Image 1: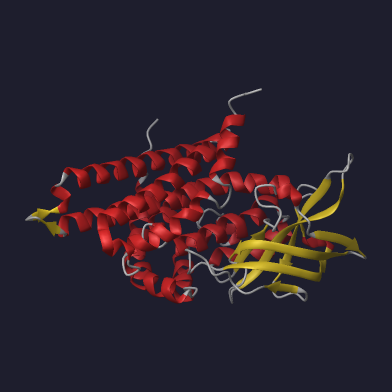
Image 2: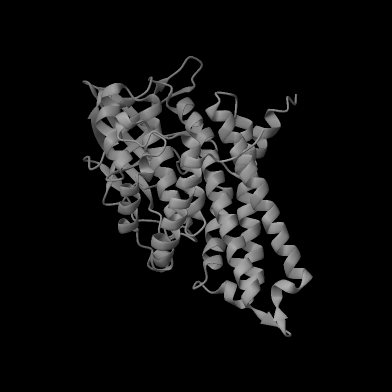
Length: 383
């Protein structure tokens, strides 16, 4: 099997790469240092059609596919993971659940806004006691007189508190199944809605230009028809969204790994010690070679998972492999890039320092490395 990009895909890759270098990179350090959301950059991403890449034209999309989105994510993450995650979460978590599970009325109402980039959507799953164990959901939604009354809290929700956030879909306990298990459904909350609060943003280690908030719901009332998908299928449906999202996170991770490599090769050629470029020393050559191996291997892993998904084949395990391999590649490359840069690598003025802070969350978000190992092991058929 060959993973050769089509002419159209190569053109998209080049367009996004130029956008990343010319528009995103020059302001990335500023937004990171000031912890500000890059509204101008996001607006330009919307104008390019990036938020509509994997969606049909009838809903305002670009008519591409999920792999097309991943190509764009990789190029953006090469220079700024925060911007890449704004796009990833906007598409994978904000728009994709509506596209996958919404009825036609919901799609027509929400997707044109979200695919244009004029509005952002978010998905609230994680809670204080329910991260990897999402079945521990405590947020409740009670059906009363044709309306859902929602109470509870969510944690670590991306794109949930911006000025252009217009929709937050949340998982909530809507009843009890036979045997006492929770019935978990997904419900859409338009923003603003009375009782919905995006609490103050987190003080994060990295991804400082990405919007992340805890959310609280105090008697939030929305119409019964805001149920997204079948009642009681909210958690199961979101697991499917996570499987796809892990491919996207792998693409972000590959972009980060490649960005670290690019910056390190440039620095190794420019920096001189003892009369020659440090890239001529074997210790540095070998680090750079290993960085290249990691980025290349991780890219093949997410290409494979995406190809399986688009072909309608099982891809859950391959998505976990891609996410695990790529996130570790990003973290390892960030560590080596910082070492190659020496003292400069510890200065936030350098892109590798930002990658060093940003990359750790790639091993945690949308399923920790331990969860990926669990899923991979489960597929081996162990007793």
